[in-house]
Amino acid sequence: MLDVYEVAEDNWRDALEKVPHFAISETPRFVGRGIAALAADPGRARWNARSTSSGELAKEYGVTDLDGSRPDAWRYVVEVQDAGKPADTTGYR
Image 1 (cartoon, rainbow, N blue to C red):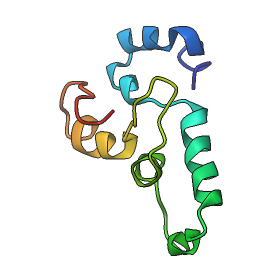
Image 2: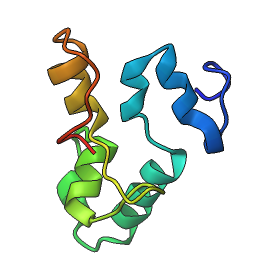
Image 3: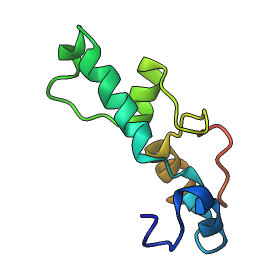
Image 4: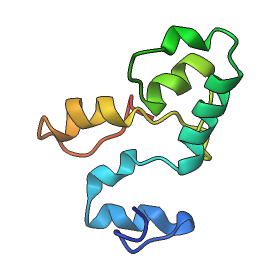
């Protein structure tokens, strides 16, 4: 995604000028932390046969992205972006 928006990890916010909703983006480490927490969970079988998101894993396991936030991108996409509202991550990070 960074390549698509012609930014890097240290300046990713520059992409917001072209695509304001990119503000909800998350790093690969965020989902990685969620997966690691899930793998370490002795009760992980409760997740069998269902889909989840990095935001849901973060909420369940308390993991954060590199900036300390917990982006809930899929809820944001539905409630803000797809609803045609202006970019605002308040309550979604």
